[in-house]
Image 1: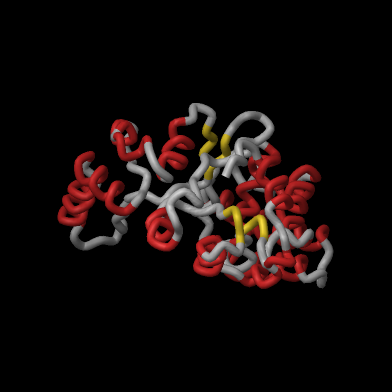
Image 2 (image 1 turned 30 degrees about the vertical axis):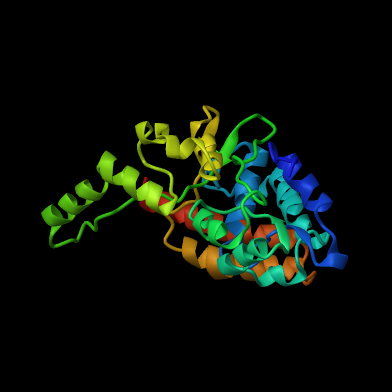
Length: 270
């Protein structure tokens, strides 16, 4: 496929170009179900050039007019018919399947899907490109799929736990794990392995090698983040996508929820 996605503008333009609803083909594998708002916020952050969902006072960036405009542009992909109508309810499995079976042309997903695509799609019919650039030339990236481990502060076997983490996270084992499971290694030196310079994984590795990366992760410190991305935001965005609620109300409800949680966290953790 000669087209590529270098910028977010390319993403939206190709979403329209690749859509032929008469043939049940659509530009985007859209995620309207659980955690779909994460993809939306990914674009919102890129559009407003923010590395956080909040400003310094703990207010959601969704209150900004330019963020609301970006939110609208992201969801217009669905409202303009560039995604399957049923994708309003799609989660991870459905959006991946939509891409694998050729119903959708563009999938924004983490690198473990490479293995699934290689098993189910003909070589040469698909590829991976680095994360699109924002209009400031930077790539705002949430997270990749890699090998990372954590130990609870209440663990009763901290020494043994640390030994396991240390073993699994060694450069040698991390490289072997990353190659076997199609993930991005946690060491820059491991990215120099030839495995990451060819094939679909090179698209992800290329993003990581870009000096203009902005790591813009979601607020995982918030206790109710899972509730927000898994249920509250799903309900709010689906009201908007089904035209049961206005853009303004939808964005305000999302922003109010996030701001309340973030400011409470800031108060408890000065």
